[in-house]
Image (cartoon, rainbow over all chains, first blue to last red; front, side, top):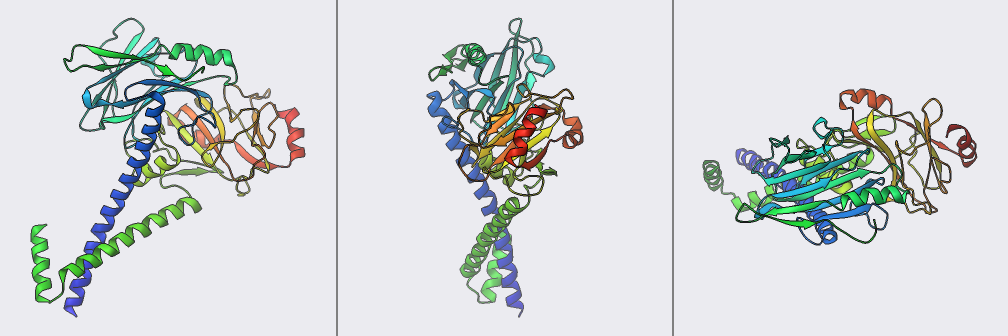
Length: 213
Length: 219
């Protein structure tokens, strides 16, 4: 009788530990699988890592992500910080809502800035300095001082080396081609720059886009 | 851990029980337990609501979406249903899958979503079927605070119907099936979450005749 109780207890302990590990591991794998698949799709559009791509308005034909926003001009960049920090420069369209958000591989939105932030009220260009940190602190801060008048330098730290930067610019009338052209012309001036191994120079890449947006 | 393993091993030897069998049984039970647990969680989401979500009327919202404090299961749900969600500070996503009478949204029916402006910098109402936009001739998948027509009192009504020809209409095409409505609030006033919940629009099923007659008055 005693042996039966001990064996049952052991089986129960092993079952609980296994269940916990399987549960966490399963969810971890699922999130990373979906996240990596999405990053691969975004990367295919952009033509590689650390490159900005002006996706334009989401439509049933070009939609990359489920439950996407329909009224916003979308620009994205799949980042890979394994070779060093990345700098993203985005001209900010006036008189409309915009947001710049960065996500880690585990889908955490670890950095975000939008048109309503007081520090961005006078900014005409946002420069995001994206670097890798061992832990996710979830904070964001403006770097010490603006580089040039109107340029706001922001620092973001990612716990994962890979992730996604999404830039959304809301259009008042998505069907208005003139408005879309005005916003896309501004966004096409965006660039990314990767810090080179000598730490003093940056290799810059222009924003890419597919056809008229 | 080693001490526990040694102790268990000694104990099993004394009881003349095969330790491999005990471990295998434990692992098998553990896997079954994890699978059952997740099936129950999925069933709860399908039948009731997501963990950590708030419900008001037909709308439900999960304020922790996109945040660092999401549980592994919440993270998985976000990854499946809407990757790259923004945090509560940036955006709130209210989801509705049924009308005010509890009937699931059906593309063959017409619906009226009515309300007033919401405490956010920008908001929009978008319709999805199977997580993606519904193709329609007008290429109009949503209505937003920047392009919706309001009446003199600031009220607005969005009509969801097959054709969607009304000024504030969204067409759902001719295909059959269930759909989902998402109300997005960008830069919401998060201090006033209760206020937001109190201002959420109503969603009613209407017949096509009342939709047509409403079109002239509310827009």
